[in-house]
Length: 133
Image 1 (cartoon, rainbow, N blue to C red):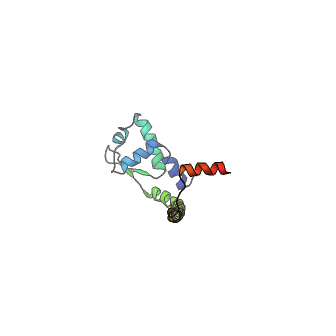
Image 2: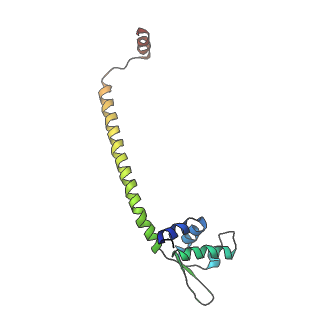
Image 3: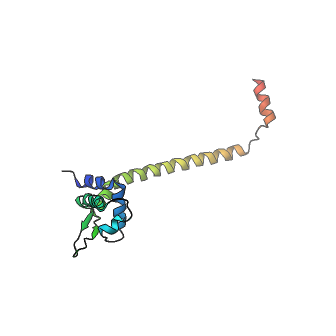
């Protein structure tokens, strides 16, 4: 049996299911309403809902004839927790890159200050140096 994180990632792998979750983030909805933006049959949408339900990402209620679907965000919290390690990795990498770029800019600025007092050769002088070799 797959672990919760695998179930969640598997459910999130499909763009239709991600769109359904985005819709449910706005509030509970019926299968019919959830199916409207998609060019697929109600049974096809129901299959997507079953995947989301198995992953624990949605809950289906029952109010007379209406079966509203609701977002269950707890599995997404597990994904966020898992991603936190990698988020720290990237933030530390970007911090190191930022430090390195500042060092390069400081060196470049220092070189410009050092070279600003020197007279630069004219194109004619540079051309002449080539012939002197």
